[in-house]
Length: 209
Image 1 (cartoon, rainbow, N blue to C red):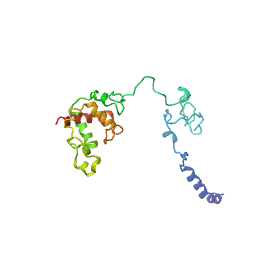
Image 2: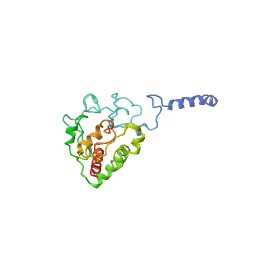
Image 3: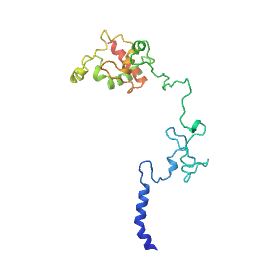
C-alpha cells in the first residue's frame, strides 16, 4: 500500500501545484481568502449569487463568501448616482471648472479664490518650475535657450511683463493653463484646479517685474 502511495506521490504533487496556479479569471487555490476578499460592498464588482463562495464562507449572515451585492439599492447595485442637483466639490470647496475653451472673456472675470500669500506663491513657483519654466523662462522672460533649441515650435514665447501680458487677469491665466492657447498645450488634466490657481498667483508676481 505504501509503495503504491509513493508511486502516485509525484503525480499528486503535480496536480496540487497546478491547482494553485492562477490563470485568467481563476485565482487558483487561495490561502485564507477571507483576509483579502472584502465583505463590505465594493463599487467595481457585483456578485449577485448569494451562494457564491459558500463552501468557504464564515460570514455571520450565512451568505457565500463572494456575495457582495447591496440588497438595499435598486437592482442590488453597489454604485448609485449622486443625488439630483448636487455638485462635486474639491477638498478645499472649489466647484468644478465648467467654462469651455472659447470662453476666454468670461474666464477673465473670475477672481483667484486663493490669497496672494507667501505660502501660495511659494507653491506656485515650485509648480511653475516643473511645468512652465522650460518654455516661459525662470522669470517669465519668454523665449529661452531651451525654446531656441527646439526651433520655431516654441519660438516667440512672450514675456509676462510685456505690455500685452502684464495686465492679464488671474482668471485669464488660469483658463489658458487649463485649456492651452495656440502652441501652448492644455494642462487641465495634469494639474488640479488648486495647483493651476497657485501657478496663476506666481505668474502674477512675474507680470509685475
